[in-house]
Image (cartoon, rainbow, N blue to C red; front, side):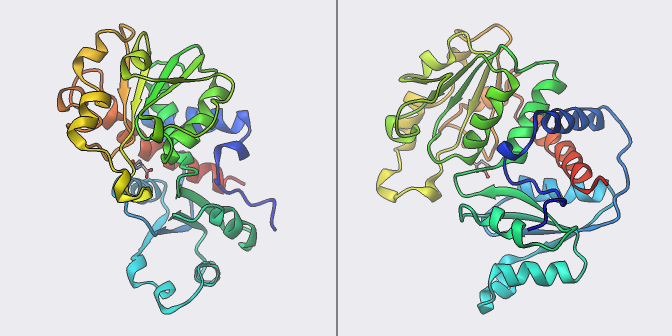
Length: 302
Ligand code: ASP
């Protein structure tokens, strides 16, 4: 185990200072601060589908001067029976400085990171339903870049909270940033099982969740993590849980709408809301690149 080499595994492993540094740096880069030049190459290893996150990491790497290498996992040696541990060790031996990994297996990122040689960094770009730390950080940076401070806000997270790694990382991050009320809402079988943790409120309707909310974050139904028999009917789901303009009438006057994407128009969000003036959805995508630049800088900082 090499303690000196930084990795981004989850929100809990970041100190408050590190969280602030990352958010502030992403905002500074978005406002035109000069990115440093990092002399390292980065391999993107995505074992689950991705468009925005993979492209975002790739663009971010290029913008800080790193050499991004995309490995098509369907063609990789893991399909020839090689363990991911050996694939990763092989890439490290070639001098790859940073590995960006998306994988369904919970715990894999921490395990691989612990076995990496000194100086090789691992970034969690999605870990099953457990963690997606760069998304939570970019969401916070998106708010700050808009002049919206999480401290004291009422933030509603609506949809398939149970299977969402974005919600899981958000649940770790938002309380640390001082969010006053964290509301979770969705069909009972898509809410986290058990009692809500302190400071978290489970709402039984969308209306209850969005009333006076400052931020409403909508989530996609994570079909890939559910039995087909549990898939809700899209029209019925939209009727009960789809965010529509009328909901924003009862939210706080300056309420903003977020969604990590990909969005399903007419299911969890009405098109007019996704495209409306309260929507920060594309701003999240834009800030994602700056946050990932900030992450690379932080990882490789000596
Ligand atoms: N893109 C996000 C993720 O990878 C959200 C989603 O897929 O719904 O978790």
